[in-house]
Amino acid sequence: MLDEVVQADALRRICEEEIALDDEEIAREAIPFPSRIPRDRPRFALSVDHLSGPTALPQPPQPRRRPPVQAAVWPWWRRLPILRHLLDGVPASARVAAERLAALVHKAAGSKTVRIIGQGQEAEALRLAVAALGTEAVRLDPGYGQDAPWIAEGFLRRPRPGSFLDWFRMAVPDGLRATGLIVVLDPGAVTETLSVLAGHGVSVPGIVVPLSATTDLPDAAPFGAGFGLIAPAAPRHAPFPLRKAEHPRISLVTVSYNQAGFLEACLDSVLSQGYPNLEYIVIDGGSTDGSVKILERYRPHLSTLVIEPDDGQSDALNKGFRRTTGDILNWLCSDDLAEPGSFARIAETYVEHAPDLVVGGCVRIGETRAEELFRHHCALPFGGPTPLSGLDLMKFTRSWHTGNYFFQPEVFFSRRIWELSGGWLKPHLFYAMDYEMWLRMGLAGATAYHIPDMLACSRVHASQKTQANKLYMHQIKQIMEEYRDMAVAVQAALGQASAARPADGAPQISLT
Image 1 (spheres, helix red, strand yellow):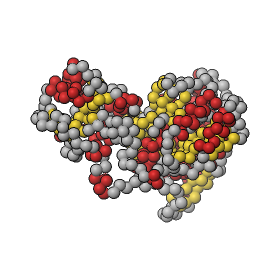
Image 2 (cartoon, one colour):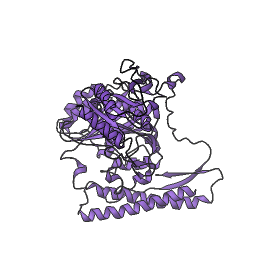
Image 3 (cartoon, helix red, strand yellow):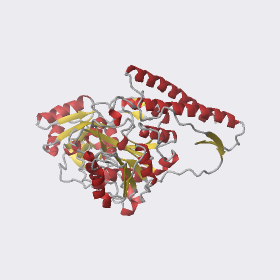
Image 4 (cartoon, one colour):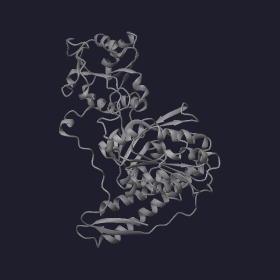
């Protein structure tokens, strides 16, 4: 019981701090109160019961278990053909001159860029030697970069500029296509580098690693100068092929209202994925700009199409999600786009690791896909599953607003965590309904798996509601007030229930 009381108190304090920061920003920027949000916050009733023994809470899916033979050769680099013909027999030595290695690298890379992963004089000497031979070479620090600090210990961490992960998270897929060879100088960085490179739908370039790191890489071919070569991997979408019956159902909801200029591109980006187990639901609120005509043309390709008035985006999304039957859920705004191949990557990650959230990157674009403004990744560590910190999520001004977390279309979530965290979007929220949903998921114990792929494009244009004068800050303040009141009520209810708690019971909090 003590842990629950401590968590509730921490939540209350964070909310009070954030309310003060919200008030400062609203006053400093003279942000008017928007007419679309209610001034009165909804109230709730709270009760605390005790549970003992098994509960009926939905359990997370089990990761796919590979057969023993397949597990023995699981890493993709162990299943690549051996290139015995490439510089076989060149004698290795403990330390070779940068010029000697550079000549081999130059020959193997062809006309493409070489990425050198390493630190210190050895890495810089190799970069200069390769460049002197006419091949573009770029040096990257291993992994996250030297001493990359944790933003929130165990939860959030960003790669340093100039590191391998900083380059790679923004490079998929174009940066890989332009790379002819990756050279890893530090044996300790080989496993992490190979793990990050695995699983992409574009060719992975050849990877040169120290011979001392090839003990567990039986398919590494001799490269020369004390190094081995892992052959380029062919384009692929799964670390092991998913049989048709294994494709989890992805349910996607698009809410449409007077976005005819962007709607067709949105629909095409979803339907052109070719994902074999897709449920695509579109809810239109009675558009008057030609959107309905477009949707009627696409009706045969949609799982469900509803055209009727609604009470705003949250209401329309709830209509759509009530109709979903999938294992993995998300929504895509009618002015946004899904990136090619993204559904396959999401499915692979879900089947292999069973996280509550699959998190990728998001491309911020302008009026067209060609107008790329920047690329975003959250600060969750790559891989996982990583716990989603509900308390850090509450720090909207101090953490969320700095870009540590999500752009809406880059996060897909499991039905389990959707139902466990309430199974709805709060209908009174005109702004930040996605943020509040992720708060509930974090507080419900969600886990996230972060992949480097760009999963979607988020469009910036003049008519977006979230771009208008930071009006959403008033709704953020309301959310903080709601959670502060909830934390106070939880503290009081837990205190009252503690005396009557059974020895083997656990508190179960119900909000209505």
